[in-house]
Length: 179
Image: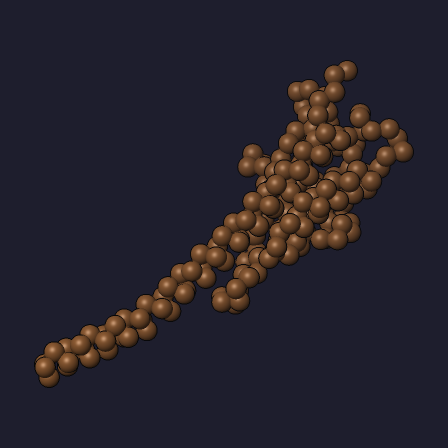
């Protein structure tokens, strides 16, 4: 019986060592998967906010569909308010900047030199170089209007103490007006 008792003790000791090794690995994988899924959820919401803003910007258009009392600032504020309303659903991310711009490159993203109106996360205008007068709506030259969000993701578990800067953008052409 001595030999069998020793074998059982060795197996119990081996099981404890395996558990001690496997538990942190499994915990790391579970927390990592949770952080990743939350980040992907926030990324989907940011994409929806961009599309909502770009769609509204395209529908509003430029001077052809807006009467003279309307200004670039009032139109852009409507767009920014809609973007912020959708982006508020991002649980573990912080919205940094909102850009309403005209992409000049084929990739549709914002590049230096593109006409752009930049806003902070509260909707406060920081800079402006994309007036309503340059948002053309006559086919076939409708202006592409993009909305870009820059945001910061902070993992909810606190397991990994890092944050990631991310961005999303969407572009639509201004609604055409036949003259």
